[in-house]
Each structure stands twice: as C-alpha cells, then as structure tokens.
Image (tube, rainbow, N blue to C red):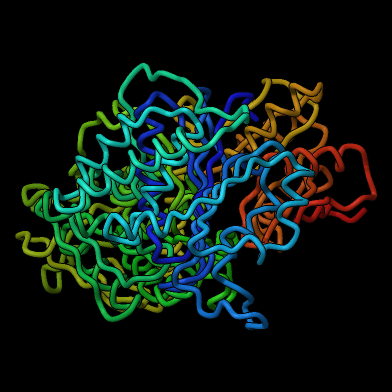
Length: 635
C-alpha cells in the first residue's frame, strides 16, 4: 500500500456518466505525472443500478486496486427503479452512498449530492462519520447542474468539488474537456467546473490531510485497458478481419476492433450468433486473412464446434474468451476466473490449441501478438483469456511500449513456386495438404491458400488422408493425430528456448521459503501482497502463469521445487488452476493450498496477505474476507 496515494471512487447509477467521467479524471491524474489504476463495478442493467469506478493514483507504480479507498463522490442514482420505503431492491437512489461506506478508510472524504440523497435516509451516517473521522460534504450538485442547463453536468461539478478539496490544479482537466467536448457543451461544463471549485474554496473550511500526490513521468504515458491491449496487439500483428456478437465483457474488444479496422483496410462483421461469428472468422483465415473472433462464457460455448473444426482442419484463428461469473448467465458484469477448464477442454476430442492468459494491459498486447504469430506458424487455434476485471480496468503504460514493427506474415504458407514441387495426389492433382511428411519435425505441414495455382485441396471436419479425403483407416488416424498433437510440444520448446521472453512473471527474491502462484488478472494484487509480506519479514516469491496450454512444466517445476509451500490464488470456487497444476505436476500436490474468491469482486492485496499468513501459521481460523482456503490433499 503506497503511503502517498489517492483512491477516488465515483458512484452513481448506470447511465449517469460514471464511466466517462472517471476516464477523464484518470487521464487528468496520469497527465499530471501520476501512475493510475482503475477498477470498474457495474450492474447488469442498461439504466439504473448502483455502479462505481475507483481510481488509484500514486507517484509510485500501482498494479492493482487498493485496500478500500479514501475519497467518495456519491452522485446518487438518477435512474433508480423505486426509491420508496419497502421497495424490493431498497432505496436505489441512495445506494451510491450507502453501499460504499464499508470500504471507506478512516479519515476519508465523502461528497454526496443532496439533490438526490437525503442524509436522513442514510442510517447512522453522522455516527459512522464521527467514529471513522470522515469528512462529509453534502452539496446540491443536481441544482447546480440544472442552473447551468443540463443535469448530467453534476458529474463535472463533482470533479470541481473534488479538485478543490484535494487542492488539485484544473489545467489537465480543462485540456481534456477541450479536446473531447464540442463547443456547444464545452463552455457550460468549463463554467460549472470552475464555479464548483471556487464555491468550495470560498464557502467551506476543511482540515483533512488528503491531497493529490505529486509525481512526474519520464516519458509520455497512455491509459489503456486489457481490451485495448488485445485489440491493439491484434491490429499490429496484422489482423484484418473480426466477426462477433455482443456479450459482456467481450464486447469491449469487439467494439475497439470494429472502430479501428477500417483505418487498416480491415473488415468487422456483427453476425447473428457466436457460432456464425467463429465460423465466419475461420473462413476468412482459410482464405488467407489473419482473423479473430471471441465471446464470453455462454457465447464461447457456442463456438466449440468451429473451434474443433479449426483444430481438425489445421486452420489458424485467434479467439478471445472474456470470462465472467457463471454458470449460465451468472453474474454477467462481475469478474471471475471460472472458465479455465471450459477454455482448455471445450469442443470435441483431444484439445489441440494454444491458450494464453495475460495479466495486464501490456501483457494483453504482447500475448495477443504472440497468439497470432504462433497460431499462423503452427496452423492451430489460439485463445486469449481475459476477464471482466482485466477487460475494463485501465492502467498507464509508456507510449514507447507500442513502438513495434507490424507483422503481416501469414506463417507457414507455400508460394506458387514452392507448390510446384510439393507432393500432390496422383488421382486428381490435389495438393497433399495433410501429408505424412513433417519437414520441420514440428508437426506443421505447410498450407496453400485458395486461388493459388497447384494449391487445391479438400477440407473436412472428419478425419482425413493426405489429400483431405475422409479416411477411417486406423494407421492414418494415428499418424494425423500424432502430428497435430506434436505441435503443442513444438510450441512449448519454442517458448522455452528463450527464458528472457517468458510469459510467466515473478515477484520477490530469487530464493524464498514460500511461494504464491496465480494466473491472469489477479497478478497485480498478488505482487503487491508479496512486497508487503517480504517487508513484514516473510520470505515469499510469486509466479504468475500466462501459458495455460501448453503448460510451462519446466518453469513451474523449478518454482515449486524451490519453495516449501505454495498458495494458489484464483477467482473461482473449484480451484481450476490448482487442478491443472496437479494434473501436469502431480508430485507437488502436497505443497499446494488454494485461496479462492468468487463473490463477484476481485482480490484486494490485504486479502492475499491474510490468506497467506493463515496458511503458513496453520491457523484454524477462516479468512475474514469473502475468501476460502482449501488445501489440495486435505487438512
């Protein structure tokens, strides 16, 4: 936990502009020289329902959400279904205040809109404020906004109030508004921003100690989410076709790709369902275009048939699986890492695919590029797994990080000159696309593209012979299956050949007594917990695993051999990554204990610290947070 940090939470109703307001404020903080990290919480409703965005800002690097927060701007829910006493969902109008008080730190600040929130409706607000030394300001932001013409401008007024209370300069906020707003709404927004700022300075006295941290960046920064990282990586790796159907949180990737593909001469298609989306992308790839599709949970389930076709026909494609809490519709707007087994084993027969789980927006960019590179070189599907947390949270990344060369290469595709000398079936001149020959000893038989002279071949979802004809001969089946499965070993060997380029991320001393293992978006919280534990005198090292298939056996073996015990941290109820590790490395089962969270909220660093200390002390106490400790082989 940084000594000097602001964790600002803006809360309101869905449709109240919470997300866009927080984006601008986060950018203003970043441009003022701070490192920022955002966390988004929202309901599965278009309008109304309690939503908030949290911005953590510090002059030090920040990798995750913090433990609680210290500034609340509660706007109230202007789209509340029912604010009458006894309503089934309670008084939704005031929930942006009442549902956020438990996480507010001692000495924190509360600003709430008296235009929507009556403090008399908030149980024990005054008593709790006194007990926790909260500094509470009730401001009629709604009336202020109406005076300036539009009620939605209460968000801007709230930013002005925030800036005054934190003694924050308005220059960066003004610059953002000027670049983003048309003149028609710019002037009234600038006016209300300054009016609110000056009103707080002139009419209120405050003695709180919270201020905006001061920092400076060595180079220009950009603020991106995991969805941005996936989309930008795909574009830079030459993807020029995407097909999809909207489903939260996959929609973010699909939308960003759809916005930018025309700039690159690419095509985006929204189709009738997820089966059609994956099939259409598969067809585009077969025709010689780098293509992708994706979905979330139930939508990805519909893609299992085209996914199997990609494996059998050895057609490269990249799919994105943006996890959310299930089963079925589950918690459609909340994070969970419950689709790991679904992604690894969905479809028919033995899995023959690549699966990467990036942990940060920067990793999402890098690993999406690697997914395309390997998918097209080894002619197999690659899946990039993210979740609602990584999909929507924003983090600053140096702009220079993206200074890379594009890669339009289609991988192992023969030229027409090479096809002249390639083996063909004597019966009809068909190219032996699925030849028994393995020229590079890696399972890959080079392919041709439709329209190439001498490159005609058959494609089927059935097992097939060298020319692509349906074939049920046992010997042929073994040869073809072994060649397809051989690719996984070849990819693993390639990934292991350069330890400096490993996708696994480590934190803590090279030699430690205890280990923490995680995967995907929980990495940042784990790394902050590791730093705290080592500062407190423990000896802890962590590994965050991104390569899920093929599994990084050598790296994980070395890590688990080096520690006495390991805590496996993941957001699901069934310990899916621990199960994968036991499947691949069963000899380490007695070393593993799971720390699981599946309440719809991501881990906070303090929850991991608590779980670790309970584990190493063999405590019989249950964690105080909504987490669960579960040993791999019983107590």
